[in-house]
Image 1 (cartoon, rainbow, N blue to C red):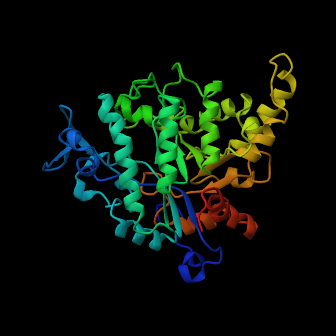
Image 2: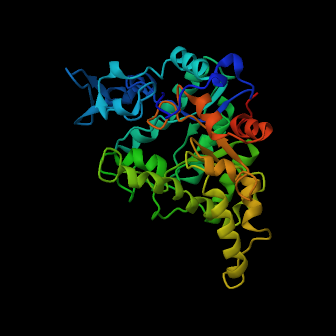
Image 3: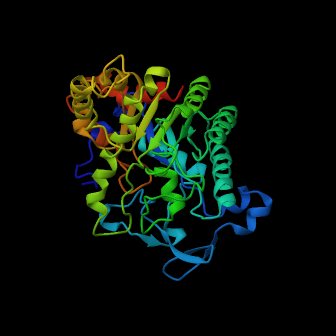
Length: 400
């Protein structure tokens, strides 16, 4: 019996697999801690994190703080009963080594993987914080060069200034990135600051995902049109990797209740794009809500469509099409294990869905991805399954 709760299925074996390619819409790549010293600008290298070995736990020493190495994001290959929050680097799977990553993809039947994660550093030093975005961008593209066909990195960008972000988009497009990851809401001018503090995480790390919901910049503002225009012109996808609400990681009291709320909270940024007519003005703009799950997409679409039909007059809604139209045209979502979303695949809003493994995080399906796909897609037509586990993601991110 595997950690999936299923006995191993014979038809999941490589030689028996009949469902074709699998393109993982959301895998993760956390850089090694010593990467920063190599990729930061010369005058900032001495400010990079340092690893200090311990007997039971290793430590990251950074800006006067000494914290244990966290293990929760590196659980691939362990069963749930063996998960641990902190530990030694030697206990972590070397997911930052291209040989290890590609070997694990082979073992799990992954033909290609879209890679999220990485920077920026959790610092309150503005210069170091901004430099760490570019350091990560450069490192992850070097990592992906081991097999550019199979390893598809997402470029994380700051969102404190529209023109600055446009510069990042253009640079990343020239480097070969096909998508950028934005925080769920724009950041402050001091980008690391956020009103969405999480006790166990540095503000800078939280801000990279969530931005600041109460900040002066908001995506509905017309000044952002020049950013959406550049993203479309460069043929890029804008991804949002959760972030509208960040779970309280490491907090046993709140972690489990927070997890589902972190998924459904992504309805807010999606609604901002729809109801402020961003998709109407930029019909080629594609956004992906990553790791949010998709079982709620069809419900959300029906709810906002029926609400819009009744409320659009007094609210002076500028929309010329219903919200369901824009969900089907512009919005994509990824999930890990979401039978409900799969069953709703033909409903408005439920069509642009993409399977993912979440490797190597604690929710990962590795190394039983094929077993889980066969379980969750039982009774689903073969072509629909192929679209969800490969074709939709491959088309969105231009993966051959």
